[in-house]
Image (tube, rainbow, N blue to C red; front, side, top):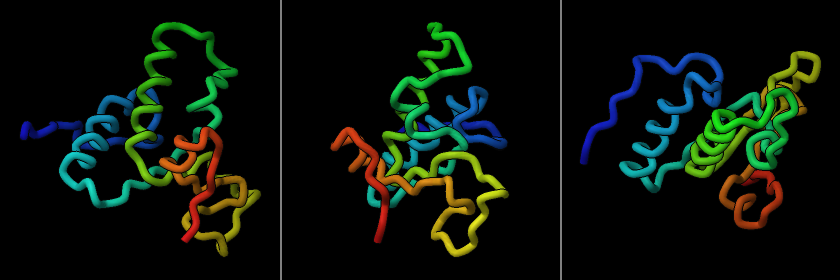
Amino acid sequence: MEKVIINDYIRGEPLAKENLDDVLDLVNEFRLSSQYKSIWIYTGYTWEYIFEQKYHYYPKTQKTEIDRLKRQQIISQCDVLIDDRYLESQQNISLNWRGSSNQRVISVKESLSSNRIILYCI
C-alpha cells in the first residue's frame, strides 16, 4: 500500500479550506488501514452547513462546491461528528464528549442512511 504523506501539522479547524486535502488523506488512510476503529471529528461547522448547502456567507462557486464536497467526503469516512463551535457562554462540563450545550454528538453513518440527524449515544 502506498504511504500517504501529509503536512507536519493540521492546525486549527480540521475542515478549514487549508486543511481539507490533508484531513481527507488522513481519514482515507486511517479508514483503509484501521477499518474497525472509530473515527471521531470535532468541527466548528454544523451538519447543516456541510450537508444541506447552507453556505450563507459565500457565493456558490466551483471552488466552494469542491470544498463542500471534500467536507462531505471527510465526514462520510468518520463515525461520529461533534459539530458546531464551542461557546463559552454555553459551557457545560457534565456533557459527554463536548464542551458546550450547543454542540451535538452525531452518529454519521446512521444520519447519512436515514437522511436526518441521529444523535450518537451508548
